[in-house]
Amino acid sequence: MSSPESSQRRQENVGARWRAVLRVDGLEQLRLILHLLRWVVLGAVVGVLAGLSSAAFLQSLTWATKLRVEHGWMLFLLPAAGLVVGLAYHYIGGSSGDGNSLIIDEIHDPSAWVPKRMAPLVFVGTVITHLFGGSAGREGTAIQMSGSLTDAFSRLVRLDPDDRRLMLIAALAGGFGAVFGVPIAGCVFGLEVQAVGRMRYDALVPALSASLVGDLVVRAVGVKHALQPQLGDIHLTAELALKVALAGLAFGLASIAFSELTHGIKRAFGSFVGWPPARPMIGGLGVIGLVALVGNRDYLGLSLPLITKATAGGAGIIGAAFALKLLFTAVTLGAGFPGGEVTPLFVIGATLGVTMGRLLGVPIPVMAAIGFVAVFAGAANTPLACTVMGVELFGGGGVALFAIACVVSYIFSSHRSIYGTQRIDSPKGPAGLIDGHHPAMTINHLVHRRRR
Image 1 (tube, rainbow, N blue to C red):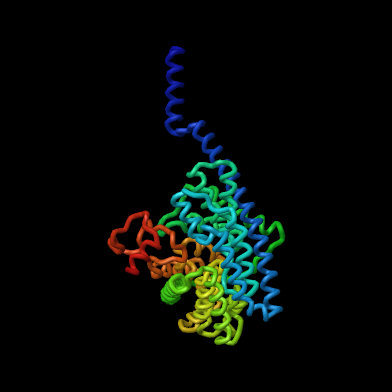
Image 2 (tube, helix red, strand yellow; image 1 turned 60 degrees about the vertical axis):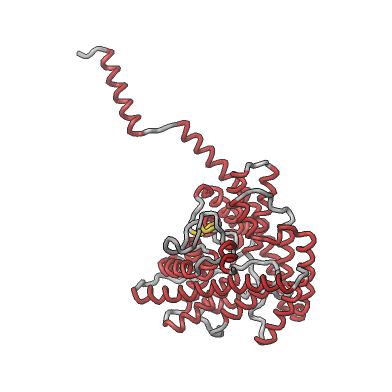
């Protein structure tokens, strides 16, 4: 018979073996739960701010677009509207004029608070842009409002720089997810957009919380997003994949053209027009001139009817529609009108998809949906977010095609971006492709190097 002491030792050995297998640390799990809850709550706060501001903005854009369409003469006031917006940004805007790039820069190096006045300035300025006929989008405004309001909250509760950085990433996610109704893509966008070739997983919880809550808030107050046609199941073949890859090359080149032309016009205005408020005024005259040359107003504002036509089969879409929308938007934004780039990029991609579908013999609704997300993937260096967006908007049947086009567009857009302060963490090509590359190098640094 075994003694009580030996029996106790056997029980202790059994307990030790189970602890070795399970390795459960109760205190560690408790700390993780508290960490999770803290960032779910903080992310939800960001989502509420992003959702409410985006909902108000979307409603205002609907009103502005309706009023402009009903009163065509308002286009001729665009130069005066540009002067008003230019004066506001020049004399009271401060660093607010740096827009999305300022928020991304603060994520890299949180050294100065995002101005509180950024939110009302970009809200009113973008509504004015659309009211009088400028060609611009929504994402930039939603992100800037979300970033400005979020940073004001971070200042109020005295978050430290590391926490503030995560809150700004959540603001990117919340603003994007709320304004487009794509909460999962919004989360991935926030994690992916600050740097080329790197995801910020430390912000995963607040980014997901902010994007989900932001989208729920927009829907809860009754603002509805336009529904896109579902592609259904698509049989993937080698031939179809090759055609989509070829189209991805065209989408990447279109994103280069957009980035280069927009930034080039901005530099030209900076060089030849010394007084900043005059730049959007002259840009307004340029838009009016383009309308006179084209002979219609299809490329003003968001141009959402072009997306509807493209994804419905392309009837009425001319082959050069993508180039015209690109030109109208580059003049508007390059001149200094506030607004986003993303919706115009959706339009450019969808209409270019119509052209590529005709050339390659791919069903036009399919190629228009692919172009919708792929041009933006190249322009923003966010292939994963755009692939997810394609699934959220058009259904999962085309996921492989979205991924192929977005990745090819991302690679062939090279090291360019609509967001100049994106850091190049991992170059897109072989080692040595960028001389003197280091992880803190930004797109702007590379642009300045190219111009020497």
